[in-house]
Image (cartoon, rainbow over all chains, first blue to last red):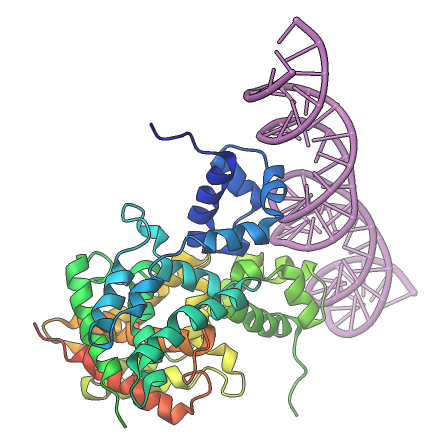
Length: 183
Length: 183
DNA sequence: TGTGAAATTCAACAGTTGTTGACGCAATTT
DNA sequence: AAATTGCGTCAACAACTGTTGAATTTCACA
C-alpha cells in the first residue's frame, strides 16, 4: 500500500523534527542523518548542504492560508491555525514554535524574519484594511506568538496544560484587544 | 577615578553582551574572550567553565522587583520594567529578549524556565490575588513577551521603529485585556 | 549472467569547540 | 636577595562541525 520512504523523504522528516524544535544551529548534520538512519554525506549529496536542507523544510509549513480569511473571521482563523499545528500528533511541529525557535538563530534569523513579514504580517494587514491595519496586525501577531511562547517554551501554568479550547478562548480574548485599537 | 576593569569584570561584560543577544549555544568561549581581549583559558580558570560563566551573567538581571508592585500598579510597573532594559543605551540587553533567546537553548532552557517561573510568574500571580490569578499572570506575560518578540526578534513594523511611549501605550492596552479575564 | 548506472558508504579533510597542564611573568612576602 | 603567590599566555588535547572524493554496494536492464 504505502510506499516505503525514500532516503530524501527520510532526511526531510528527520530534519523538520530536529530543526523545528531545536533550531538550525543547535542541530548537526549527523544528528539528522542518525535519526534518519542514513549516512551523513547524503545531506550535501541530495540537498547541496545543511542550509539548503533547512530551507527545504520551510516548504512544509502550512497554515499561511488561514491568514487569508476574510476580515470578520481573521481572528478565529488565525487562532485556529495557531492551535492546529502541521502535524496534530506531533505538537512540537507547531509552525509558530518553529518560527520563534529559528528567528533567534544567528544564521537563519534573516530568512525567518522575511518569511514572517511576507507571509504573515503583510497579508494580515492587507486583510484588515482599517486605518491602523499594520499596528493591529503586529499586535495580533504579538498575542499569537506570545501565547505560544508562554505555553510551549516557557511552559507557564496554567497555559502549559490547558485544553486547546480554553487556550483558544483566551487567545481570542486578547486578540480582540489587538484588533480594537483605533486611535 | 574609576578603577580599570579587572579581567573577571571584562569577561562578565563581554559574556553578558554576547550570551544575552545570541544565546548560550551560539556563542563560543573564544567569541567572549576575543571581545574581552583576554585569553580563552581564563573562562575555565575564573568561573569554572562556560556554563558557570553564563549563570554568573544571570545575576546581572534586574527588573524583577518591578513585578513586586502593588496590584493596581502591576501592569504599568511591568511594562515600565519591560521597556527600561538593564542598560538603556544597549537596547539588546533587554532582559525579556535575553530570556526568550535563551529559553530556546537546548542546554540552558531549563535554567531559564525555572527562573521565569520563580521570579516572574509566581510573584506576579501572588500580587494579583484574584480568583484566576495564575491565568491572568500567564496571559500578562504572554503579552509582555509577545510584544518584545515581535519588536526585537521578528522586527515587525510599526512595532520595530515605534517610540517607546507608543509601545508602552499599546502594551498596556493588551495588558488590560489579560487582566480582565474573570470567568 | 553480465554491464552499466545510480545509490550509498567510508575515510578523510580542515576548521571549531571547551578545557587543561605546563610555563613565564610580576608583585609581594620572608 | 630568595621564595612564594597570584595572574596570564601558550600549546595541545579530544571531540565535534560540514563537506568532499573515492570506493563500494545495490539494482534495473540487456
